[in-house]
Length: 107
Length: 143
Image (cartoon, rainbow over all chains, first blue to last red; front, top):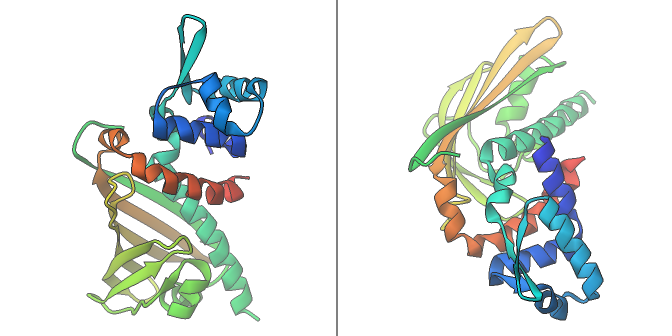
């Protein structure tokens, strides 16, 4: 797995963080306050998650007056969506199963 | 990523298997064995036979047998129809078996083309739910 994929997986592995990102994907730009209202966690926690998402390139922030608006950067998911890397992972896992099966066929 | 409407890409996986080609061939061509390592299927080793591979995630692949050379080469189409071009795929999978001193060398090549991914990002919102559902499964194998 490439470093870019590894970072994306780690970043999106957290369910709260993933929910925040998914909401930005679906509903567009939002302030921290608006995100907190439905996140089920406190505003500092939401802010912390947004920083991690930003570091991974998954969100971008825009300052307007006293508010910071966050938006999803869908292009950042490209390393995960690229089908050659996904299919490579798929086949490697399947061939592990195949080798297990071949061992069992001896018995 | 490219800006062309379609693009051909290949995935090649090669493995040395410590079992003879004849046995490997059985695992690649007998439906109950295919199911154990790949997916549920109604495969038959007859050129022109159309079959489906059914994934645990509910997806169904449309396949047609292209080449059957016993113990040597097996090739079939591997198409996935989806309204969202981000997930659609037309491809050909070819397994090549070569005997070795310790068993067999297995080479799998999947060549395919699909609608441009970049274009798909714009209107792909409906697909994201499915993507995130799958992500959990992928994560389970990520380590």
